[in-house]
Every structure is written in structure tokens, then in C-alpha cells.
Image 1 (cartoon, one colour):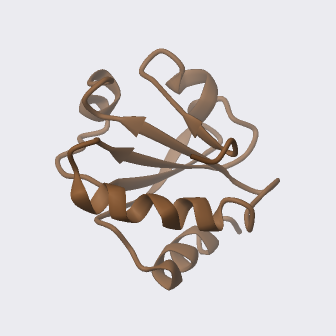
Image 2 (image 1 turned 60 degrees about the vertical axis):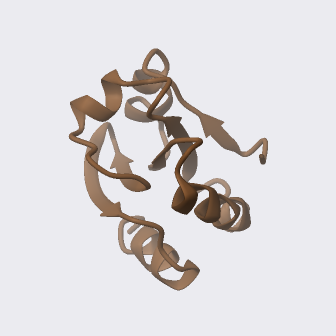
Length: 109
């Protein structure tokens, strides 16, 4: 796992995501989730492309159940983009790279 991808917990969500000076893409995932595991290398692949413009974070829904409940996570992987402490976009399901970068780019303006 890249040192550029932040692992967020219920306890660190506020500081790492909501108070981040950068927009944050957070991936809600679980170890048992096949699509989540298949999607993980894509996050690794794009993390350097967005360095300095976007923070990429992951939250394990099995180990951290308060945050997914707070945001109504019903299936994984779910991706959310937060800007200035506010949820601005959500996508459910693993995306191909072109759709992922379009999703991110459309919310970094």
C-alpha cells in the first residue's frame, strides 16, 4: 500500500477528511470485498497524478462502523469526495480508471 494513501478511522475522520485543506477522495472498503481488492491498485496508480491537489484515503468499514453509518454507506466500494468539510460527490462501485479520473476531475474545479 502506498504511503500516499491515508488510512482513516472513525477517530481520525474529522481531522483527516473534514478538516483537510485539500479535497479528499475516500474509499470505503472491506478486506472480504472482491471488487474493493480489485479497485485498490487503481487508487495506487492515480495517487501520484493528484499529489498536492487531492488527498486519497481509505476507511475499512468492518473496523470503523460509525462513519459509514453516518454517511449511509450501503454497499462497497463507495467513493466520496469531500471539499472544505462537505460531501460533494458519491460513486458506488469500482470504476475503470477513465471514469475515476473524470469523477475526480469534475469535482476539483
